[in-house]
Length: 316
Image (cartoon, rainbow, N blue to C red; front, side, top):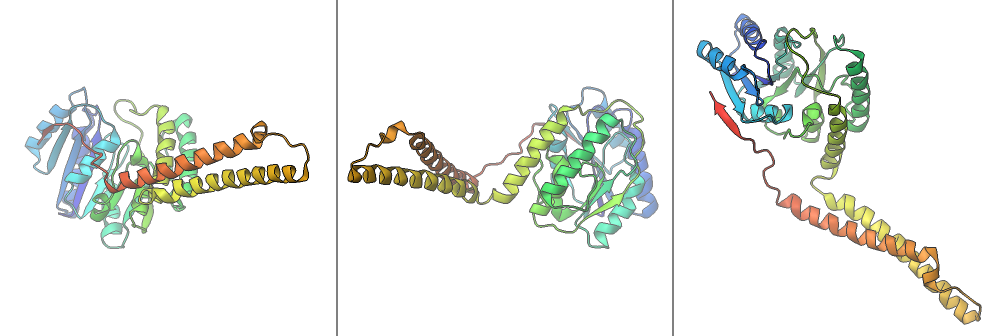
């Protein structure tokens, strides 16, 4: 199979017929073998009924319905697991992404060696309350991830080599950072393509301002897990040993000063009366705790269980 199109959706009953027909037209014009994977993230409108009707008309459509709303990352993760195409395309269901971009995305993956191609909506039809925070978010992500050639990490329109989607785990709000996850997984040829952005035709956006806070916390998680996920002792152990040694040397200094004052017969305060004593005590305790945290995290990382388990109500 050439292409798998993965579409996560939540309450998009109006746009689904138009979107799937648009995808079918593009695929048939280019002669691609394909599948359209529609992942219903617990919609409470008639989205699933529409998917069932579309399935009767087009065998290329695969429908997966969550029992409740888990979020876009969960929908993408399940869609990635089901995808069989050599190239996997993701796009939103709100018709703001254009299926006409698919042939170019496919060519860059299949024939030009890219592992991942991320869309860049250079001209956006979004309010300033969304575009300004997005620019800030992308700037911070570029700095922390080291992927300096992407302008829009959160664009829903992306293309992946099949190996990429089978190698990354998407959860929480991690869908914004799939290029970062791909980089940590060893896929370095990450490219960008300018794509068209259309005004929303039906419904309203499903994402509120809280997504920026969650997104930033997930960025910190990715940075930590990517750098130290397989060797947590390197992080906790290093800080723990450093803290312990600071406390240890302060204690040695206090003992030395006490012994010197006794030898010289001078008046010297009790060790417990000095602020340095409590500083050294805290440093030793924190150092010990961090070292033990690193040791426990090392054991956990070697025996981690499955994280992504979602209740799927129906599949067609």
